[in-house]
Image (cartoon, rainbow, N blue to C red; front, side, top):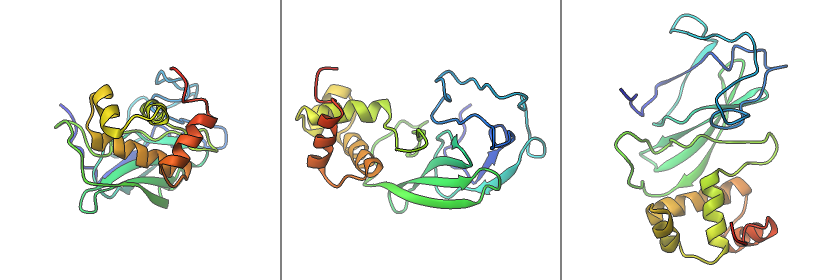
Length: 195
């Protein structure tokens, strides 16, 4: 059975239970090696509402993205449906207190699978600069080649709104302002050539 996409509490036990001063970062979905393993020892292998939980924090909105951890910060995403916002949240790893939140996409809600949510993509970081997901990089490569959003959508078999959302998210992550700056960035990164 799949969990409902709404979350009222964010339970954080496994990753928060390790001392953050020496703990391994969990920078993306499936962790630092991309295989879901951790080099940390010992870690809890089970928890409940009362055991092996360091803190509980109410998360606004709807979503079911996996959290990531870098240093003393935990990041996750949520969707505020009434405002049509997709929001990146940053929490303190030790206390669960909100440090900040940033709207990364504001646009009409796209079509989605019934088991999915509007905030399913796990964020990623290298601790310094924002890191693009594989899908964002793929879309950026096609934007740099001059394809329209509709052409990209057809090629990737997604809606053009999904492409628009990925482009807007990429602009926000890279702190760019428009498609021209995005194409310039892609060319500088060598993403305009053949994949």
